[in-house]
Length: 317
Image (cartoon, rainbow, N blue to C red; front, side, top):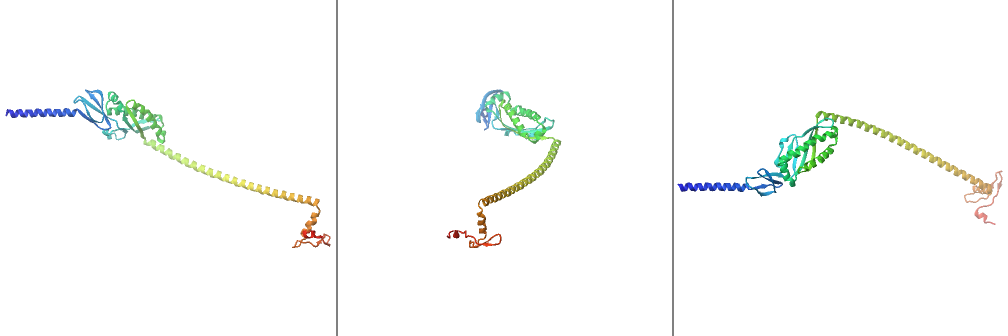
């Protein structure tokens, strides 16, 4: 009986030892997933030892590992802030309420995509804490300050009608160095939406409708003016063409008249110099169809023969 109890006790002790050894063994290793790194702390003090993805050894019971994600993390503002999935690298917070330069109430929604600089994990662990503390103390803190202050530099109408891109660039330019100083690399900032009060939106839309109506009427007036101007220019062109045509016809008539006068003058000078031309012209007028002249009529009514002045007649002796 005593031997049996002694054997049981030995088995129990052996089991406890094995269990303890198993616990020690399991506590001596920790697994770091891909896209993450671990910072080892010992009795609450940062050791500076960084664990890479894979199976890593640590001192059992005294070492603790803080996990930091090195992949992209998303911080987004939504009405439903309870949808945060921090394990998946998504942090959801409420939008920021602020005012514009002219006092209009607005709600700003935005998103921030960033990474933790793995080379600054030790500093982050010492000065800030774990990943959630980094998001709360750095990303949330700075984005909320900027989302309250930057819209105050703009009139509500500018934000409503077209300066969103300009505001987003200003956000990104100011946010990037603030995050970098704390070991956070900004990948992208997106100004998702600026919500205005309903009465202001209605007023703006009414003004836009009125402006569009005014522009439509102005366009119609401009078209009518253009058509009238085109008609005037066309009439001027036709009138000018008519004037130029008449001027050309007058010039043509003048040239013809001058040519005829010059011809008459030349004929008169020729007749004065050579009277025989008159007889030649008269003879040519009396030629028969064969081109011969055998007689002529004098102005006094008498009939006198004329010389045959044709080439054949001129050759006769």
